[in-house]
Length: 140
Image 1 (cartoon, rainbow, N blue to C red):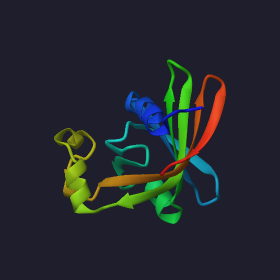
Image 2 (cartoon, rainbow, N blue to C red):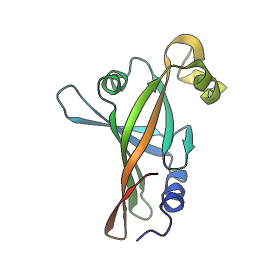
Image 3 (cartoon, one colour):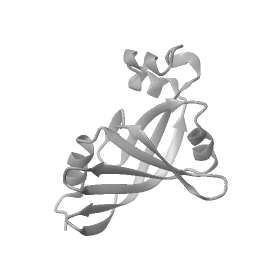
Image 4 (spheres, one colour):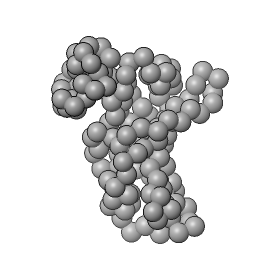
């Protein structure tokens, strides 16, 4: 059993360069995509990514905010799944907070082009796997 879920899971997440996000399509099927690590994280409750506005995920999250994210530590064969809601944010303030100049490689016309979109995930519960054992937990 985890002694401190925020610390244990936070340490796992912090070391991963790849994350997986899942959405629900119009037919009710899960869709999973590999992403870079979140660009911002608040504990194990709130995560932020950036993506392009034409992404099919944007439409899916606008239609159904139910989402799942996953982080996997290949070296120690452990991982954490978090379930919650994904919001699509176009607020200028959060865009300015997240934006980095190197993002122009993804968004040629810059932060204000309309192509730069923020995804905000808020976790409600999770499941941690390590040492052939799984453990459910609530995210406070």
